[in-house]
Image: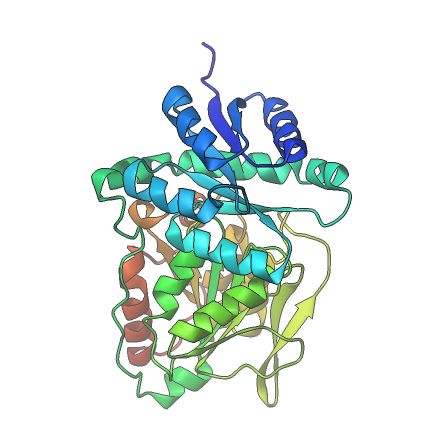
Length: 363
């Protein structure tokens, strides 16, 4: 029996990008470009004619920009969308806004030698299309209520009021596809005296700083891009910079951040595997791990090592994930103590940390 291919609509005002995306997609056995469009108005016609499963969407286009088209689609006829962004600070800000509006993920256009650069991204682009296709059920469920945000509104939580819990404990978060909004949903609930949080979100260079700044503007805790050598403090969330692994190191003065440009792990840098492995080795029972939405298995093995070292681990449930890959793998590995809907994770974490002593390794 022949497997049905993922049908993709490519929307971009650049003929070069349309041609490159078509070559990349059509070279895969499980996907095909059913149409291309040079602007959003043509795209709307193609959406009705071809009924694609996934759309790739440029941001800067004539007559209507990609954000306006995305917002219109999410209100009327939602489907999984992957944004195509420039590698600039402005491109990062607009792309993050697109993710807030409901885009599943994004890819970046190379700054130089676009043809060679796009072909280097080919496998990454194909993986993102597969992840978007896996998320299609989420968009069908939204249906007529597509204007309702996919991520539930955060309910701010009270101060921890427990100095030991705040100063001694660490929260580690790993995420990929859909992770930016999931992380936002958790961090916006946390009080200013929350334990320190270290985050590995699969994201390219230049975007993590903008991501941290956007979160810092809406959270009671401070959110920043992690810097090599800085002391880890409660009330702060540290986001791994794109292109660097994030690790922690414990010394006489407490935990500090270590950034590494070592090779990618599980095809990612930053990698959740590297962060969680570091937590298992350096923090042990003082750590609490959270695995959020994402495709693949990055971090599952290291999360098990965290559990074996005494850490307490949570995973986001399937119903609230954009893609249930990484949480599923962590659960299958035996690394997870409890599986929760996204909107319940922050409260559970604070309740656990404020009321418990560190776990015995292996429990």
